[in-house]
Image (tube, rainbow, N blue to C red; front, side, top):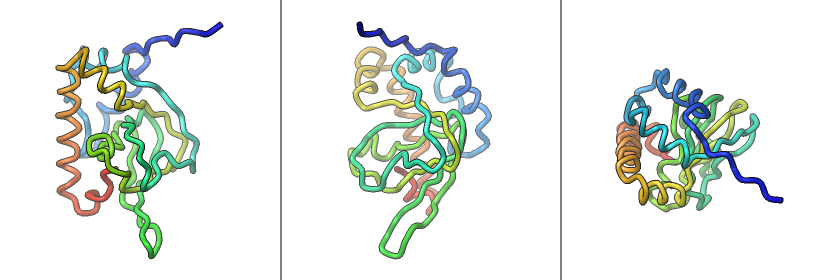
Length: 163
């Protein structure tokens, strides 16, 4: 007998919202969405955990999933012919994977868990459902992610880190 997944609720993402609210970086989601919009968005996201040392995003991968970091630390690095170059470290409250999410291009960098992490994922299919059912929420999220990408583009070091 198959089980029905329990829908995600605001209570489920409370720790994520707390992390976003306390994110000290200049590149953050902050208050881009209202509490009611987060409540709607929560139903379209899935939680996941990743152990320290595991690869979340591989450079060159075609995956378009977007990740919201609830806890833990991820490192972003670019690999060229001379080796691995560390570009950034991102922690709780950050979003990662926005480059591939929007561009449909291969991932530009590798993202690895520096510590155990709890993340929330938003797949392109679920975002499409959100856009069809709740276009205002989808637009608010897209604008917030666009602002994050624009801020990251200002920093040459983080420019390549748009995964």
